Image (cartoon, rainbow, N blue to C red; front, side, top):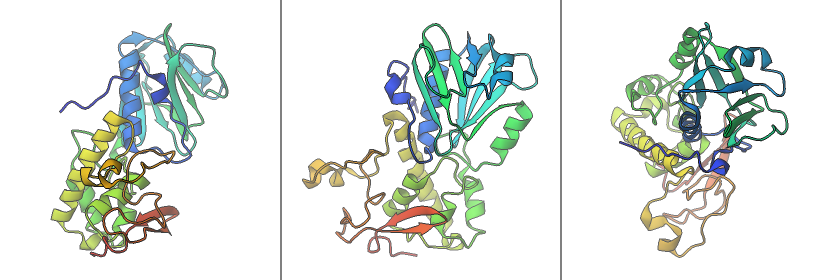
Length: 291
């Protein structure tokens, strides 16, 4: 299935400026944009800010072989002839990664990868480290399956779910259960399957998990294509319901995410929210009664 966009011609789409942790589809879009722009080319690597200068110097002038996403982790790989051949990037809550026509760097740029035409600038990441293949494998091994990746094994995630008494809403945010799933996708997939978010993992059947996983695969891969998260079915779109389109900095048409106090699009009940493990959880108390 081909769902990867070619978006190097639209730099504005690649700028991640969000005061929340980007979900997996954003990181996959960035990985494919970097690959489209720089794969198999000799690139300049620098650290205008200086905090990554020593590592950048080891990669400067070498061939960038590609970029790859695993959940919310981005790896940029080089053919550099040194023990450490990948840059591991995790944007965290305030990280920004933008791809734009080459120009003098602006602001605190931790990492710049560029050629004569394009420059990728990284600012404020949680992680920016030069790592060996062994260290890269360790990071990946600690992650759960990624719904966007073709090599994902959802049974690995379910093995952790069925052993845990934690609420399924908490487990879906655990990157060892489903890498790349964040607050929006967890709230929306639970609503779409009418699942009470406080249902213990031990009470989630394999059939229920497989159905939610299959839905995440479709939703998150479409997010890669569209660059936004849309989770409502056609019958609940604004034009079908005669309602205004959603206006939110996070974009997309959703059922419950950031809709506290508003009527549920399906039953009309008031959407609720609460704090669960330091993150806002959104749900419909009527549609999601099932435990």
